[in-house]
Amino acid sequence: MADLWQEAMDHAVAVARKAGEIVRHAVHNDMKVLCKSSSVDLVTKTDQKVEQLIIDSVKEKFPKHGFIGEESVAAGEPCVLSDNPTWIVDPVDGTTNFVHGAVFVLLFQLEFGVVYSCIEDKMYTARRGKGAFCNGDPLQVSDQKEINQSIIATEFGSNRDPEVVDVIFSNMRKILCLPVHGIRGAGSAAINMCMVASGCVEAYYEIGIHCWDIAAAAVIVEEAGGVLMDFEGGPMDLMSRRIIAANNKTIAERIVNEIKAYPAIRDDAPL
Ligand code: LIP
Image 1 (tube, rainbow, N blue to C red):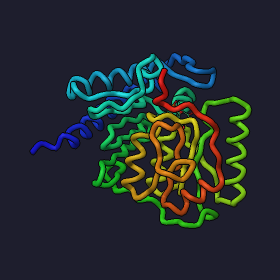
Image 2: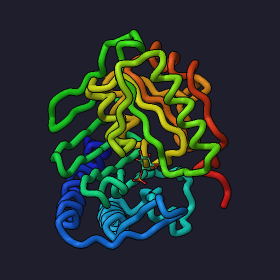
Image 3: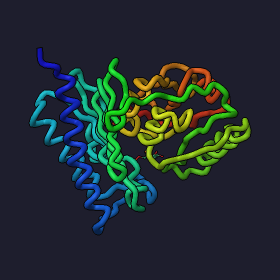
Image 4: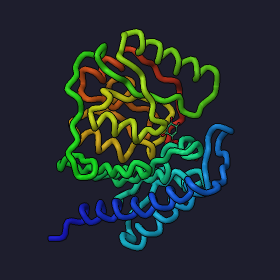
């Protein structure tokens, strides 16, 4: 019997490679940078072109599948999961890195995750119940249980409201003073989460991200043996704009005890 999920995942890998070529080409040529919600929330013509490429190619192959795409939502499309399989697509995760010269591409479908770090040519893949891989090699989270022997990844995001910035710094201060070995940030939620899956860092947390920043890598983290948690300790809610991804429950709960969230509008809030 045909394995439709495998077919969809193979398609995602193929289209990610094509998208990677476009992104790599753009890095070495002029890129047109536009602003979205603010002067630090960036989008490029490449983000839009890559998202269209992905949507067109998936629609052709799987006409009944739904989409949530970062740039389509920015253009007014609803951000809701349909009853049909839904692809959650971030064409370039880490757009600010891209504008400054380093790039990542990310794709997702609810049953599997594909994150392509195209400059490094690292293809991260995972399918529910079948493990997580980078370029075909299995991924496994770190077995560290002591927070003070851990490295934590986080980001500043694109919200520059002084009260929000205060919460971000206060959270970082608390985590640093535990103390932890260090705080890192790759400039891409997806890559931070792939670092958790690879065992390079023990955990990643962020407030203000969107479902398309984390959806693909969420499957990759879980399939590498990690856990996803909400800031209040329950299961992660994909639409809640906050996430803790960790190597195990002990580290995730330790982070829950230290950090607080700020009010964020949900991704699926009515327009
Ligand atoms: C970005 C994230 C990054 C986060 C930014 C932004 P984009 O995604 O991956 O980690 O801090 O707020 O959401 O906008 O480059 O796709």
